[in-house]
Amino acid sequence: MVAQRVYGLALGYEDVNDHEQLRHDPLLALLAGRKELERPLAGKSTLYRLEMGADEAGRYRKIGYHEDDSDRLLVDLLLEAHAQPPRRIVLDLDATDMLLHGHQENRFFHGFYDSYCYLPLYIFAGDQLLCARLRAADRDAASGAVDERQRIIAQIRTRWPKVEIVVRADSAFCREELMGWCERTRWSTCWGWRATSGCGAALAGPRPAPGARPSAAAARRGSLPSSTIARSGVGPARAA
Image (cartoon, rainbow, N blue to C red; front, top):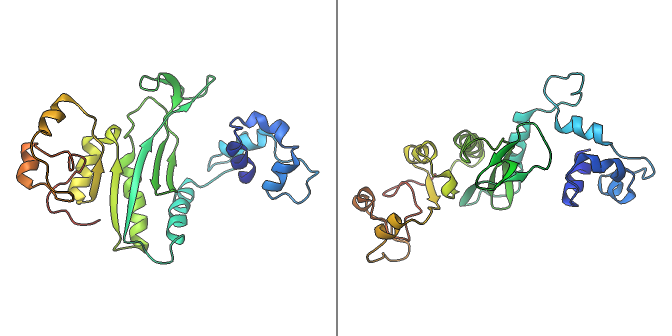
């Protein structure tokens, strides 16, 4: 059923209602691993219970899942994909809109995206998905980012204790909670700042050589050059 739903999404069928017809498609049955192609796949109601399942089975929630195990699986897939620990991995954090076209639960209007949507949180290491957290759009893009980062980094550290970890995010995540945590724990970080007139004034002046790090004094003055304005925790930082 998971394969059926995933392949359906990949083919552009986002709504589970589409599977009332797709369940009879022999090609989708072949992709989903069904040996008896004449037998229909799961219907919309079964797939809905799969997606909306909870740990405690109820009248309408008969298929459960373990959220913690699912979270650990995504990180385990990254760890198992490498025969040897890499020298460095970059954890990219992003939030994007998931448009809604009906009156779904927790439906809110998002001013930036100018639409009703969900606002899921994603964390990647290259092409490997490490976290996909569905959230309502009535919250900040960085909401929950610290907890997810801590969980993922702690799991990575159990297998790769010496790998350098770089935390990277755009301006939507430039929040005191997340940036302060990175500075306190001395992680290597890279932040994408939004251009403003104040930034333009701060960037005026000679630029350092490529790869040079700003001095601690320059960081305190707020006069960071453009090549380093995206870095948090300037000064002598240890590799994560």
